[in-house]
Length: 366
Image (cartoon, one colour):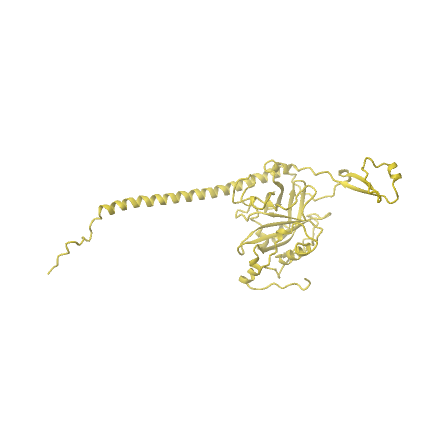
C-alpha cells in the first residue's frame, strides 16, 4: 500500500521562496562587483609597478647619456698638482715671542733682524679644483650629487649624498619616491675637492634589471669575472679616480647571525689608530672574508672605495666589494693582474655554516 507524503513535506524540486530568490539575485552581482574591484586594483598596482620600472630604466639611460656627453670619456689618474697650481705662504715665528709674520711683511730686512732661533716655515695652499662639466650637469638637476661610479658593463650610476642613509633608499635622482632609490654615499663620508674620507662607502639596491648594483653579484658568482672587470671608476665632482678591486665578500648585517659578532664594514669611514676601527682590523677582515685573493697589495696609505648592496644568502645579508685607488705611477695598463686565486678558507658568518656545514680556520699568523 502506497503511503501519501506528509502534508507539510516540500516537494523535491520545489521553487525557492521569493525571499531566497531575491537574496541570490542580490548576492551574484555583489560578488561580481567585488571581483571587478579587486581586478582593477591589481591592474593599477601592476601598471604602477611596470611604469616605475620603465621610468627608472629611462632615467638611468638619460642620466648616463647626459653625464657621458659632458665627460671627456677618458679616465685619468689622480696627479699631484704642479707648482703653478700652488700658492705659497711664508710665515716666520720666534721662539721667544712666537711672532707670526705674513708673507707680504716678510722681507730681507725682517729676516736680518730675526734672532738665530727663528725658524721659517713654508706652507702651501692649493686652489680649489674646478667642478667638471659632467658633474655640473648632474648638479644642476640634483645638488646632492657627489660623483659618478662606473664599472664597464656592470655599474653606471650617478652618486648622491644626503643628510642620512635613509632618503635615497626610496627616492630617485629626481627626488621622486621610488622603490629603486639612488646610488648614494654614506652621509658621514667626505667627498670634497681636496679632502676625502679614508674609505668612501657607496650603497645601492640590487635591482633585478641590472641597474644600480644589480650586477655586482657577478663578482661572487665567478671569481674570473674580476679578470674582465678589476677596476672601478669613481669620478668625484672634481677629478676622475680609478680603483682596483681587492676584496669581494658576503657579510651578515645582524649580530645574531654570527653568534653576536658583526663586521660593520660600513663604519670604517676613517681608520682609527688602533682598536675596532683600525686599518689592521679592516684589512684582516676584508682579506679573510673575500671570495678571491687578487694578489693586489693594499695598505693604510691607500684611499678606499666600498660598494655595498643586498644579498640573498639569508635575511639581512650584504654583498660588499672593496677597492683601493691606484697609486702614483699605476695605470690600468701596467697593473699586474696575474695573482688571482680562489680563497678556499672563506670567513663566513656562523649562519652560513649552520646551513652549509664546514668551518673557518683562523690563520696562524693572525
